[in-house]
Length: 248
Image (cartoon, rainbow, N blue to C red):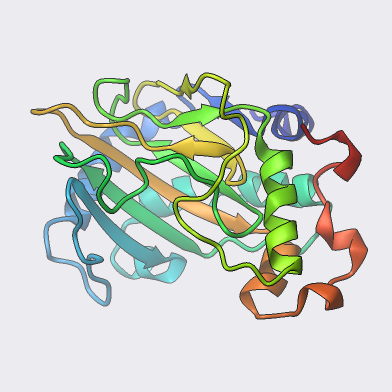
């Protein structure tokens, strides 16, 4: 059972909430389906161009169902995540229809393409992250700076208002704060606001990392993705998850 109110409060305060072992009972099937995603035997979906140490399979909700990846579907598109998104963004328009299945190995160049550098994402969204295998610092646990989500969101709005293109890597809040490594066993689930300063950990040689994601875009993100001009956005949508005066 998930306490949605408590989870939403954690998201507002820290920018993330962790559910250790939430999907532990599905771990064997999750691993089998995750491996199937990289077997080349799926219909209608294909891997993104591989990067150094990273393989990603982008998939719609329907793609998972059509390929009988039912456990991945169940874990990435649960009702509780939609309900949590609705609470966090104070909106009933909680959309969650896209996933990424990720298999990471040793990266030879940390400065090369990928998400190993500090960043926040361009849109105000929530990410659900499932640890399909045990994840530690040794095999690339995500690193975050809790509490930086509001100030990075303020930077996002400022760039949008002033027609400044999003640049990756970007200037991030919390430069003097330490990273927190989010380690967890198989079946652990993390939900975080992608406005957090975060980065993917480095996988050591001989190790690998198996994770899967899905996303919920806020109503603000939906306007941004649709190309709506900043000054046409209702003020109520700019800070649906907090108070602009409280960010640090």
